[in-house]
Image 1 (cartoon, one colour):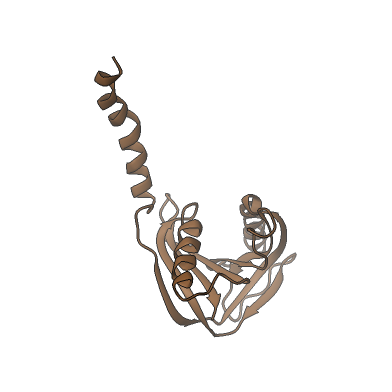
Image 2: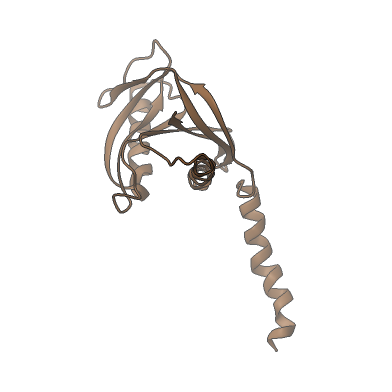
Length: 175
C-alpha cells in the first residue's frame, strides 16, 4: 500500500517544500571575499536576549524611525557576543543605517563603524535563511585558513523591495 502512495506524497509535500526553499534563496551560493567595508552611520537599540527574539527589537527601532519621519536605510545588526558561547543569547545593537545628515530618531542611539578590512559573506536570500547560510560559509572559509569567527560581526540586509522579503544579506567580520 505505501509503495503506491509515495509518488503522491512526494508531489504533495516534498516538491512544494523544495520549491519554496528554492524561491527563498535556499540553494543560492554564498560568496566569501576579503574586502574593505564601511563607513556606516546607524541608529540602534541595545539588545540582550535570545537570538530568536532579535527581530522584535529590530521592528521597534523601525517604528521609531517611522514615528520620527526619518528614512531608514539597510537593516544593520552589530552582534557583540557569540551565541554559540552563550547558549543562544546575544548582546547586539539593532537598527538601521542613516545618511550623513539624517537626525537620530528619539529613543535610539547613534553608532558609527569606520572603513575597515573585513571578511565578507554575501548571499541573495530571504532574511530568515540568509544569516545561517552566511555564518556557515564564513566559518567554512575561515577554517581552511586555520581561523574561526570572532565577534563582533556586522550583519546588513538590503531588501529587494519584494513582498517575499528576499534581498542581499552581507555578513562582515574584521580581518
